[in-house]
Structure formats: structure tokens, C-alpha cells
Length: 83
Image 1: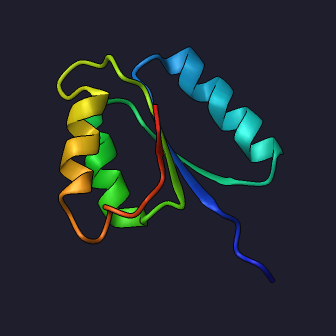
Image 2: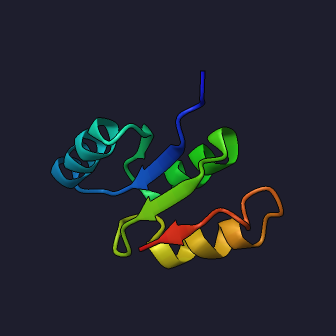
């Protein structure tokens, strides 16, 4: 059995986050969710997603901060990242 590709969605708006989750799951992806940048950084390190979809403007840690942190870590630097 082939493993599903993992997508991490980092989005502070619950409705947008849930809509993206539904669309991506219906398309056959394994979806992981994070409600802000700090949770997203932790999740990215734990699950090692194949792709990260990230909001730019979020409380605590914005999308640029997330990209900066993950880009400096060898285990997450190569993960494709989309704002």
C-alpha cells in the first residue's frame, strides 16, 4: 500500500483551515493542521510533511517567521513551503 503524501496546513482561521483540510483529504492527502505558527513549527518537525501550506498573517508567529525557523533546520529546510 502506498503512503499518502502529508500536507501540513498552518492557518489561524478555523473555517479556512477546516475547508482546506476537507478539500485536501478528498484529494487523497494525509492532512495535519496547526492553528498558529508556533504549533506549526512543532508539527513540521514531528511529522516531516511533504508540503507546508501556511498563512502569512497569524498571531504569535507569522508565516515569514515559520519559514525562517524551518529554513534554518536541516530536517525541515527542504520541505516545499507555500504561502
